[in-house]
Amino acid sequence: MKKLIFGIVILSAISACKKVEGDGGRASISGNVIVNEKLRINGVVTDTVTYSGAKEDLYIIYGDGDAMYDDKIEVSYDGSFKFEFLQPGTYTIFGYSKIFHPGNNVPNNDDDYNTLEVVSKTVTIGKKENADIGTITLTKN
Image (cartoon, one colour):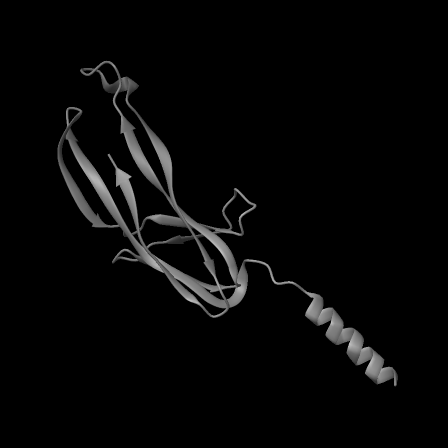
């Protein structure tokens, strides 16, 4: 009888645990990164090139109640990425575009500056799901 009660208590405790977003599951999120870069000569855009986002950093946020990233990966040589071994839930994948802002004094470029702008996609995945979020396009100009 004691073993039966002990077994019921253990099973109840295990089944009461709620899994939250994060590591330890069998789901994954994958996609590609491309970069659109504007080439400038003396502050004037002369051309725009597009290439795979090799070596770009991508970040993941577990759940939807947090603003800090939980993990970071470097995009592969061909622009592909994959976050693996995730629990079911909602995830936000993001990277940074680097935006150039010319200053007022063109001959003296001391007042030129860059800002980082977030490019993100949010996805909800289930157990053992392999979600492809498509292409994330980052801009560098």
